[in-house]
Image (cartoon, rainbow, N blue to C red; front, side, top):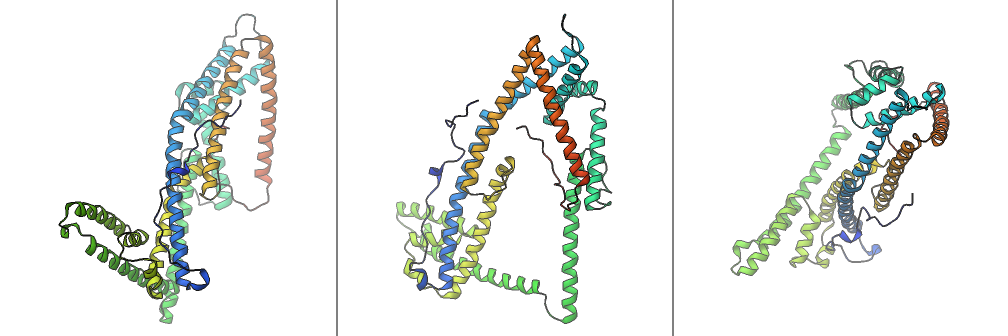
Length: 414
């Protein structure tokens, strides 16, 4: 299949909204440490805002393309798989007149049917397909789930201790993994709380506050001073822009719009927007920023750092589901958006290719010569898969490394 680049990109750089420039003028050597940090932080905030817009656009377009392209492709693939499963079942149970399958060919078809049904049931439960699976499998789906859960529990207990799944009430392996993840998180939280209690007890004996308490006090003091700085800017803007004090209707409307922006920025602790508004209404300029005392700049920088952390969190929250969907362990930057776009194109092409392969197999089953070729190909693939499975099992039981296996597994159709 030829993959074209005619599809729209998942993100659009032209969607980035411009931001007001707020910076202290001057070359780096002439600026103080606090001034340089102020410029670095305001530049970082503008960059993060741009990235946030890009990820919002990327997420929206991904959702649209998933609905318009991927879901129909997956539905067509599932339909082809179900038709192929039913065709194989008919061929095995009621072969047409003149068609005689060898024992090996029947075994090959049975294994392929089980593989297809396994994929289909991983997508969503289906009583008909589950009964079909049980007809051809030596182990029923229910027993298979129980065995898989026992194996998973044994592996987890080997790595994390025998009590890691002690309170597990039963279910499938995915439920067990979620249970163990939650228990490990609770254990980590309890251990951290105990460490804090021990540190506090040692500090109490010495009659001195702990390092954590001192850090918390410093942070609280800095936060309080930063809040006062924000409030001061807000009051200056509110005093100048309050629409009720304006007699002219047009000016009152303009100030109403500006005051809404002021209130929103103050509620969000958005210092950069408040400073931008001050520049916009000519309350301050670059000379005013350059003349700010170092202590005031440090308070500003504290607020700006919080803004940076908040924006990074919002960006990461938007980017994480998309990066995880395509197994991309990279930073949530523009490169990541480009890779998501590329991976989406590859995946939808793979789904369509697999659907076409199933349709070809359906046709091949009705032709004696092509059926023989197809069965030989499936038998060779199954032998390769059996070798891979045996190798993986060998690695699991005889690997001497201490690395813990991942606590989640996701079946992916490539």
